[in-house]
Each structure stands twice: as C-alpha cells, then as structure tokens.
Image (cartoon, rainbow, N blue to C red):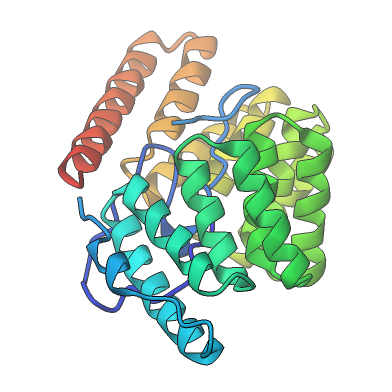
Length: 276
C-alpha cells in the first residue's frame, strides 16, 4: 500500500499483491481507477517483548527501535497486519520521536481500516520531518480513501514539489483530478507519470479511462492492452477494457475480459490467504 520504511533483511519474501495494488516500496496502492471510483480492494512479532526501554540510554533505545522496525517490515510483508501494527507501536514506545515509526504505524493502521488514526500518525511523521515525501504520499492516499479530494490533492502536490521525478506522485494526483472530473489535468498527469516510468501499468490503465471518456477508441484500447502486457494479472485493467468493449458492442471480448479479471482476483485472494 504506501511506504513502509526499513529493511526486510531477515527473510527473502516474494511480494503478494492484492488486486489493483502494489507493495512495491510499500506505498499505499497504485491508484488503479475504475469508471469514476477507485478499485479497492503469519508471523507474530514475538521479538517485541524482548526489547526493553532504557530511560537512561536514548541511543540504545533508538538502535533497538530501528531493529524492531525492520522486524515489523518483515511481518508486514508476510501479511500479518495486526502484529505488524504491534511491532511499530512498540517501536514508538522505544523512540517516541522516530518519524519512520509513525509512518509505518500509520500504514499498519491504514491496512487495518483505521483511517483517521492513520492520518494522525502521518501528521506526526510530517511534523517530525516536514520533507518526508513518503508520509505525504501515504496521507494523500488515506485522504483519497476517505474521498477527501482537496486534502489528497494538496498532499500529492507536496509530493511532486519535494520529488519532481515521482511518477507515483503524478499518477496519484492524476487519479484525484479524475475523481474531480478534471479530465484534461488528469491526462497531463498520467502522461507525465508514463514519461517518468514507462513501465507503470496503472498509469496506462488510468490514461485509458480518460481516452475512453473522450471517445478515443484506439488510444483507450492501446493503453488497456499495454497495461495488461506490463501486468498480466491486472484485474482492474481487464474490468476496464471489458467495460469499454461492452460499450463498443464486442460482447464476446468483454465476457473474456471479465473472466480474466475474475481469475486475477482469485489468484490474488489465494496468495493473500497463503500469507496469513
């Protein structure tokens, strides 16, 4: 979903991706859009009990907090959301002013559906580090989840200001513009995202929706096709292409895309189940 900070150096783990989202660098989603909305979708942190707070040695506490944060990232990668939260909560007991701890606990809260609490954690991370790009990105996606578009837009604009080469920053801002029905601005942002990262499948999917809305048939289909070439398990792109083929009267093609979308979703559900 957004940007868990830390190194998962203890285990080598395959990424397990929910449909329409990514755990790449631990960012909250890739904002894969549907027709005017967003496509939404262990291991216990037993080591936490062995980390003790030493009020006389702040440096030792911070070192332990960094170690435990890395354990928490491993737990999060394994899909154990509750225990990842407990790891990051313990990190902040050890180091109450550790911005990465608040960012990661905020992501855990997001994953548990505690969106307002997640925003509070991202707020605290940003207060501690006003140039913390990942926390602006994650908070923006949390506002997006709550359909608080103006707040989300402000955060994504801050991401782009701090990191002008952020393809996902443009992708995310474009997604908000799409929700606000500012299609020309959305198209510009999706184009920029593709310029910065030509392999960002969600950007092609999203741009395809804009082209579809503009009745640019060949451009829309080309973008959906390319999104699926980049990610053959991209369920939302199958749904979107299927919807567009249905509109064009290609009912067999639409039916096949819906079937592929269902298969991609089932594969994702199985992968998530195996991680728990």
